[in-house]
Length: 158
Length: 358
Image (tube, rainbow over all chains, first blue to last red; front, side, top):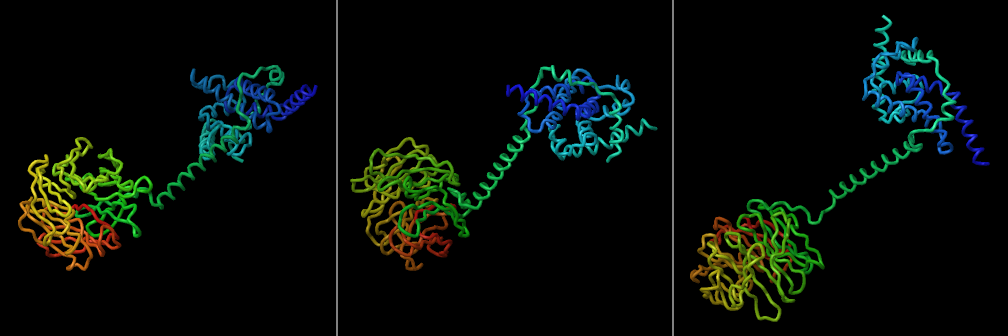
């Protein structure tokens, strides 16, 4: 009985977190991957894994963000091996199509850093932790990503 | 806030799906990141950094501590290898390098009781790359060893089946293939002259006559040696042709030791360690015995170990303040072969038995 109560409590807590943070995580993953399917799969997979781990997670939302980005990164890598990312389909997600098209022209690391830092609000040390890179490297990626994204979006505005 | 953020917010204009029903029923396919992976990674990094720091500190400490054996200064042109004894007692003697201008460094060997009592009597190979010496490991226990000039790769080349057996005073043959030395056996009345190949093979006794301090002739065909209280002898290297060239005691010949055949083959120098305490020389046929330099000229108590320069024009030797092999003050001198121009090179504490790259 106690075990069932704990599991139920965990489920309720994670659903609450999903309702509060799920959309923001999904948008971040969409910006990162440029693909609804990848973003949805990563969010679902991360929350499902969190459900299984339950009490083992002391900071579930931080863990979910990290897990989701790793799932998405893995899927992007797999797809890139099969066929490089293209603009195809991006404009179907108007009105964010221009942004997504520009993001796709960044490197995966640059996309991850700018999305996690500038959109999701993580500190650079946390971004580096989520993406599995060094802090100084993340800072360089952020600087280059901002510059490149600004140029790309200004080109489209003109 | 960066201007990129303004654009990034555009992403929220895409309608997100409700994924919770899928999450509730989904079977996770991956393990996902370990919850404490970051902490563990940080711990690993900290441990690695600490290990590197510890290694760096250890290296730094080691750099400031004397190593065993310390890296000697190569004796260099005109330099010496000398046996030195500690200030007190006669144990744990070691071989040091002395440059031509008197700088002492070493020891070359690592000799520490109880495994090693003394490393004595260094002899340079003719090509100047190897050193033969005697390692004494106990009372009446010693053998001939060979190492390179930096003290590396020491290798024992003689062994003796007898419990009481000391091999000492090695001298290289001119071609560097063979070493002659004296062997003292317990219970016998005197030492014997032996030769052994430089690789330790071919050990044989040269003559049954008691003899010590052997030295090769310049062409390697003959060996001169002293016989205690009898005199000097010369024998062919194969043991034939033994004959006495000098009877001692006599004037300028009183218990001759540490013989050295000159490079031109014309003279055999030796030390008289009892009065008149002098370096003397004699021709191989026994004629022309004459003193080269005496302690009376130098104010010393004894002289040891005459060694010829390569050109045969000068001799180096050790002058000591007292009598016997071990005293508290030993100084290296060089002198012209006719006894002129004595020059003090360096003080080496107490010592005897040495080699010269002169």
